Image (cartoon, rainbow, N blue to C red; front, side, top):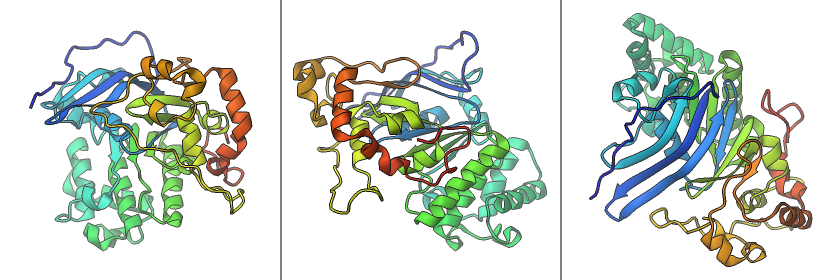
Length: 373
């Protein structure tokens, strides 16, 4: 098997920038079947104290992107190119020791499945305390007190007693809260939440999302929220990045992307969501086909095999030409359709109907500092 390596050339940042800046990120995995092009020339920004929702189907590159930010790939079989700036620290070229100091301290992650992320052999309190001792040099007593404090902060009842329980003693929602406590124990600047509400009932899901918003208000934490649920994004995020086949196909504020979607893939995601305001006899419209193999991604626009509007542009053009994400700032999309064509399509399909399911929420429920779609 051919192996690849991390990019090691030191980077120099030119002038001030956003809190987190990802520039031209490309991630390739070497496998026995070939090279998996997991992330392809991805760029995005995250401002301090805001939430970015990254959405897309499984295999679109969401989790790989954020694991790369944490430096959690095997350098012997992974090639990472581009730049990731956390303020004045470049992460792609950073040493292993630097990344170990950053992980859990300035950058933390809530993993998708807390039952597998938490060790069954150690108490919940010990696992939380270990992170605090490792990064803050605290004593066992100080770390235990900190673990109890964090369990109380995330809403675990009787934390003085539950700190000595094992993960299997906790319910699914409580394990997720314990994971959040572990992620926040060192007051990180950046929190990455990978599907934090998967497999939770809607009541617990709402509690977890409210908890993240409250903690963000208290500490000014920047959050990357990985999800496939546009309803979660509508209630939590300030900005949205839509990914497909390892690429960014649309980005903008919550209001822009959910009220005025521009890319056919975003239209498909919105059309496949149920809406309380839609008649019961109106069927959902799923995105046809399946995501492509990243061992051999489609040429040109990666969405063209599943797109209903290829003939409007010209199939040869969609297959042969890769669309750029334009404009470079603000609400952008990567599609060959002209603005006039998009407006005509949305007028026929009703952009308001497309966005209704994602935008449904009570007044005042929008993410603080963001706009209500």
